[in-house]
Length: 65
Image (cartoon, rainbow, N blue to C red; front, side, top):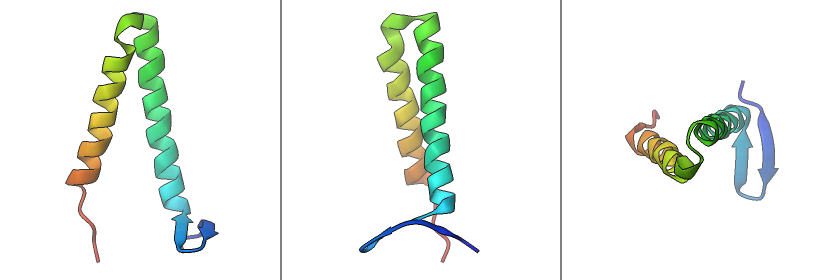
């Protein structure tokens, strides 16, 4: 069972995708907080690395049918 969280027109957001998006955002938040405490001048660089990791994960993922 894959419950639907949001269904607006042709856009459907399933619960798994919502949790996944929340986890990615939480991870980027942890990166930002940790970088802010250790070296406030390099927060943008750390967030760039985190976003690059998310993009690489999306590109590297494969879809099952």
